[in-house]
Every structure is written in structure tokens, then in C-alpha cells.
Image (cartoon, rainbow, N blue to C red; front, side, top):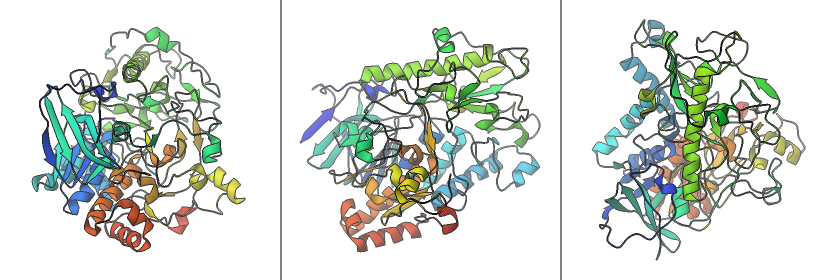
Length: 568
């Protein structure tokens, strides 16, 4: 037996799991043991989708989450969904599309909508431009709990929160047990035939010493067109502490000036290729061209010729609601100006906590800049004192998101790794010597799902500027969900077998859901057939039966021909 443990300081922070390893004290109270068919660690979208899929197959599931809200990106991280244009009909799963329908239905049942909004089958509550369904985190939470409710009542799903990992016990090539902790004295030992790592940063991989990759791979290893020359383990995409805000014209909601405001106000990013100026500015590096691009910010919502950040991730549009029923718009801030890339959450534990708190201060400094120094479109005044943080929206005391939005996780060393050569337009055009529109992504015979998004990498802790290049509608191969060694652990978040580059398009909301659902179905299939996941992939008959099961459950495994060659 190999036991690994680390310090759990629940009284300090929900991110206490970042702190260094230690040997558990002998006088700690013994853990209470809970057994299930499947233990899912992490209650984000992938974890929830996994639990739902397993439960509908009559498996008993334990789902743990370290924050007060399940839902991950959509809730505790406060990130409205990024989705492809076909999401309502193609490229997801039946349950994900049901989730989207239920969000709209929740508003129509519970909110004072205008007659026009109430009748709109494509209601976009915030009318944000990033998605056709920009909505509040609390609504996503309510819908996810509604989907889980019958399984919770029937005893098929047990949710434990806020709990986080305090120990992983390995028995050779299998996970034997996971201890989770809540507070100083509440400790549970979870056992099951299968475990799923649905954490945002691959915590089971870390604490189980399961083979994984961090950072950006070297070009000589992946042969990717846009890969780094050298392997850089600490080169991660920026993470972001999002926040919600509203605006009241004529009011003054100016917060206390943050301690390090001047440093952040004057900070000029040191990136390659160079950033056009200071971080707090309406001029940024265009993610695709890297040339200077000017953005607009106007909380009055007036239409302009350029992108207005106020409406970009707006999650409440007052015009959708009856007069005076809501005080005004609510905007979610996940913008280039509050991306944090000066460090990451994967190194030394105390160093990681330092970066987490510094990223929180960055977001508060940016908000203070918006209130006081941000140039207005008319050029006559600076700042918008009427901007107001909305803790009621984020479920926190300060209006900052409950959890950091983590774009890049530890990734399993998988049976198969998706590279840029499989899905990138430029890379495949060079590889196949064809023009865009003449080819699709590589077709995976072990496909278990689909997705579509540009390869979109934000600035990194290693000093790289944006990388935003075209991709094609892609598949999720089963091989990317199977660790090279460990038999009974599966990933269900951003921790699948991708590279630093392809993580950039496999990390979004609907893809994470599809991964989780495929994993939940896989565990149920393996238990019924008395086989392990790698045997399913290797046996063509088993694989076909499993894929048929996914199709009957409403999971899209292929793209139709009219979409498959579409460049995004």
C-alpha cells in the first residue's frame, strides 16, 4: 500500500488543498467509511454529468465538492457558457440540451419577464454576446440540483460538500480509497470500484501520484505546429477571479482603494509577442492577430461599432424583465484585464496560495480602476462610481467568484493524446497538404462525444501572449479518458489526454459535460460487462456496444458532413 497525504487547513481557505504534504497526526479521529459504486471527486459540470449518467444506470454515486455550490464553471467560477453555434441541436448530449432548456424554463416559471421574453423560445436572459444563454450562476445551480433531485431522493446520489481531498490510498495500479475532509475533525473514507477525478486542477492525479502532465509540451515531443521549443512544466494559461457588477447612474459605490492599486494600475505585461501597453486599458492585444485592439466599456449599454464589454458577458438584461422588477443589468467580468498569469496554482502550496490571493487583489484593483480611472467613451470624465459589486450574484461576501476560473489542469498521461495535428486547421492543412474546407479533423474510431471551439489559449505564466487559432468540429476519443497505468480512475474535467494547445478547445462547458457523461456511462458499462475501461477500448465488439449505449442515451458521437468541415 502507498499512502499519500497533505495538509488540510479548512479554517483558512477552500484552496487549503494547495498546501504541502504532511504525515497525518496519529491522534486524529478515525475516518468514517462510505461505500458506493462510483466516487466522483469534483462537482463541476463534468462531475455532475458523470453522476447523472451513472445514477440513471442505477449505480450508487458519491459526489464531492469543495465549494458551497456544485456547477464549477457555471456557478462557483461564475463563467457564462461558451458554446458553438449548433449547440441547440448538435455537438453535445441530450442531457446538456435539457439543462439549457430547463434554464430558460426556470426564468419563465420564476421571473417577472416581459410578454415578449416569456414567449421567446431562445430566451437569452442576459442578452450577452458571448453566448445565446447568458444567465445567473444561481439559476444554473438550481437547475443542476433539480436534475439530481430524484437520484438524491432515491439514494442513488449522495452529495458531500464542502469536502476536499485529504488522502489518496493506492493499491498498486488501483485507487483503493480517498479520504475527504470538512473542517478540522470531519473526515470520511470513500471506497468504490471506480473513482473519477472531476476536480478543476486534477487533484486526484496529484495526490494519488498518478502519471500526469502539466504545462506546455516541447514541439519535438508532440510535433505540433504551435508548440513551444522546450517543455515548460510551469507554463500554464492564466486563471481568473471573475466578479459580478451592476451600475446605478448617479450613485457612488466606490470601494476602498486596494493596497497595491498603483502597482496594478501601472503594470505593463511582459509577454511575447509584446502587449500594447498597460493591463488596465481599453487597448488589448487582439487574441488572433496580437495587434492592438480597442474595446469599449459603457454600462449604459448604448450600441457602438466595437465590442462593448458591458454586454459581452451580461447575465441580466433589464429589458427582459417587467418595469422596475429588477434594478438594472448585471455584468460578469471575465476579461483580459483581470486574467492572472504571474504564477499558477500547481507549484509549491504556499506559493500557489499567494498567487490565488494576488489574483483576487488584481480583480479588486481592476474594479476600483473601473470606478475611478477608466476612460469614458466621451473622453470628458474618468471612472464610473455607480458600478457596484454583486455578492448576491456570486454567493460570496465580496462579489468576487467563489472559486478561481482555472483554464488548464493537470492532464493524465493517457492511452491516446489529442494533438493540434488531429484538430487544428493550419496544422492539418500542412500535414495533409490540403486547403481548409477540404478536410475534417481526424476521425477517431473510439469517439465518445463531440465538441467545437477555437484553440484559444490565454496569456501564460511562462510569458506567452495569446494563441488563438482555428480548429474544426472535433470528437472526444475514449483513449484520451484512459490513464496509461491506473485501472479504476477516469478523468471528467479538463484533465483528459490533451496537450497544452488542444486543452484550449477541450476546456469549455459543453465539452466538459460530454466528457463527464461519457465517463459515467463507461463505468456503468464496465460494471455490467465485468471489464475495465482499457479492455472496452481494445475490444471492437465491446467498444461498439458501449458507443451504441452512448448513442441511445442521446450523446452525439459524430458531426454531420455539412458541419464537419466548418472552420471556427
